[in-house]
Image (tube, rainbow, N blue to C red; front, side, top):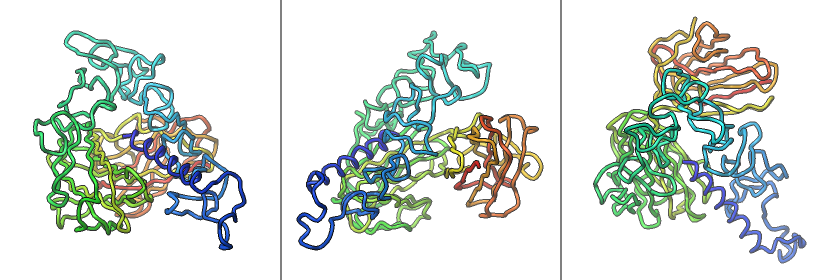
Length: 461
């Protein structure tokens, strides 16, 4: 999935550079050639101008804040560390170095083998399986050693490389798109659907409902593509989409979290992405995204059920149209679904916002006191306090949420605070004293089985 974000950053930078050259931006007077109408719009004037390909414009020279100096929004993969949001940013998609493609420092338990440091990394804290909790190899698939009956064993949890998680060589048709070698892989032998039998993307012929069929397997992904300029304008989402659209009918082969990204190939298209359930024409909308400008990308995460079909609409804003890519990834295990949790990097005094959906998780952990709700799904965040002070976690849910914090992920007795006072859709705020350098585990849970989408703000001060 990260190559899409990286491609977007590179595309946006090239567009800005070309515009600068076209305007002769070489230090000459800003009034030259204006005909007396004042300075020409440019990156750095504090006025975001989509016509120049600008996604933002904060008018300052800080390159590590929300808006880069080339007037693109800060993103993981752009090569600049976004202060308060990223640990690192090495501008590559390698997960075997010291900086993951998610812009978090590599660590034992993240599910990726750090070359020269770890023997294996299965992403859990179990000591009796093929990889111990300190990332030392045991026996079996996942230990980083090719044992009898295995084609390969790279010791990691990625199905997008040359060795799948069942220790088989990656092949076209296994349901996992191998990065750099396959455009897509839907795991079937149908040649005229969205992904061909040679693992290349088929451009859809019928662009409207019921949508071009595609499927995605557990922990697999599929890449789809098209051109909205060759389609028709028949549908619209709640956040926009008053242009031509292309529809895909994506069936989840397992229960989990379906992450869908849409990227515009060039600046002709200002992408709008929305997803419907049950019925393509009039089904309920599960989400709608329109956060970026021309040449940008949009992303939605949806709780998916095995065997269910979701209708994905690739649309445009303001009548814009052009080529695009759709990437759909089905995570059978949601990031942070269980201990050791999803690592978050915080800076003192800086609020970090994350989004998630507990409906796609599993009911692995239970809080104590008011936060005790057995058989309720939760997502865990692993936070290292950047300073001594107090942590505040504010969760804005679409369901009846609860929040609790522990000092040991798997030990309920170490719970230090619980927030469970509001009802459905009510804001929950948990706070606790923290010590610089100490690790804390934040659980976004629910009340009596309630689960759903949420956004959460983390702040240490």
